Image (cartoon, rainbow, N blue to C red; front, side):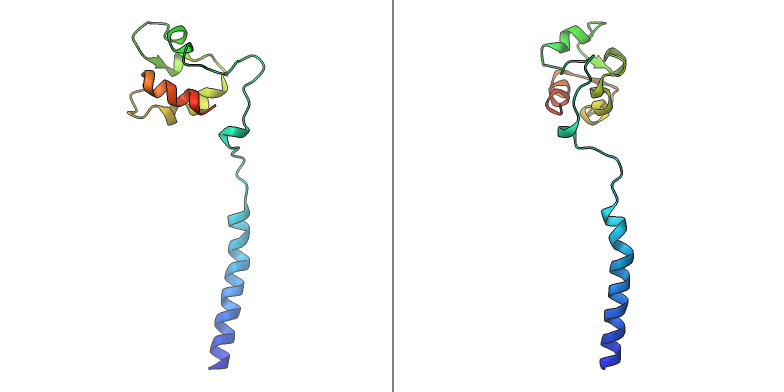
Amino acid sequence: MNIINTRRTLALACLLLIATPAFAQHHGHAHAADKKPTETHAKLTLDDFDKLDADKDGHVSLDELPQGHPMRDHFSMSDRNRDGKLDRREFAALVRMQ
């Protein structure tokens, strides 16, 4: 019995040693709270919705966000219905992610 427990313990220890680096890896994803807008782009506000809605269709598309704006990275997370554009409620979610 003792040799079986020793083998199980050794196997578990080896498994933990192998698995630990996989759990510890940093994949370069910063938390949204850690990201700051670039100097050329101020934070979005709810008032920006009408300014960004260039075609005045009541939605803001990804193309209507300024090129290089850090919030472009979060656009798809806010587009809940996956229609490629944000309504006011979805835009408000994008603003909150900043």
